[in-house]
Length: 425
Image (cartoon, rainbow, N blue to C red):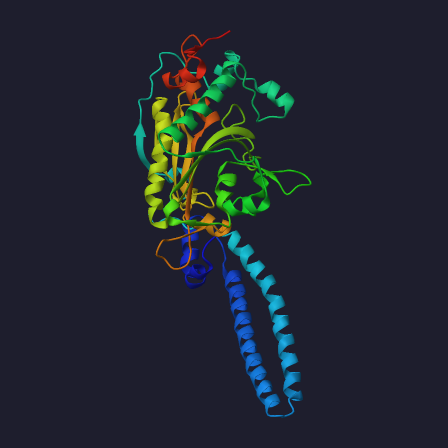
């Protein structure tokens, strides 16, 4: 959520920056509602001052034995006016808050202008793209031939866009989760979190999924609970409505969770395989930091996610999302895209974002400096470290062999009881 004072003072600038993001938002309703609120508050303050003055006059008249009946009647009228005005304030503030909740974050000054992912600049590339001496297969073909992926039975159990990993396929998924958690906790100093996989409306609102993106969520019927779309939601909300000490920052959490998304609006896209599923596993990195440190912390968080791919020797590139491709809550995002030889393209495997104080305002997460006056909002960041299903896709396609087998990267073998290769049955 944006700072209402900033929006009020810079409404034209805000509209211009939102237009750069591709949002054609008319903020005239916000302006009118904000002016109404300020007018109400001005009148309220005027009537309260009048009531205080009348009260003082009545007290003085009683002290000198004068008749104050008329003023007492005036006092009652003022009190009623004040009560009526006070009753109007919550409804106006609620409407104003609803408008603020659907305004996206403003892009960071370093984000380039663009309309779509086609305009995202590539910042760097890592690793060598392998030149196969055979026609590389796509991951679902590899997995089914190895009998480690079964999409038809998953659809029987649930529906399409679910997967069933079997045998060494299930073991490889578990190995990657443990490997990622170990790297981030042992070498990058993140604290591991195992949060609830169901969260309430307030948590979803705090990170920006609600109210705007309710169609993307799975809601539990009859409960104020949603299946989490990412560990970002429960982990960020750990500190909702809390005041942290500046000495604690940055706070760094890593969390493995299954994630659940309805994929509304994505029908017809990536209908085969593991790329776009209703349920998938992810290891998420979440940070809380001082406002002046968030730019640097974003670079460090992205490097932490990149290291997983480097250890697995998977070629990738890092792109910076342009204004038109930014997510609702993000001020700046780096996408890490891994090379998939079977599909002959780069696919996103991690999005690393800084939200500045946008989420912190919604979730009321503040901090106090040692010698500072008052409290400030923290800056929040997160990124996948990594999306486990898409990492499995990248491993199957990049490590496939001509005979249909798949080599296990050396870093993962200790997690696989030193299995070095998955061969066709």
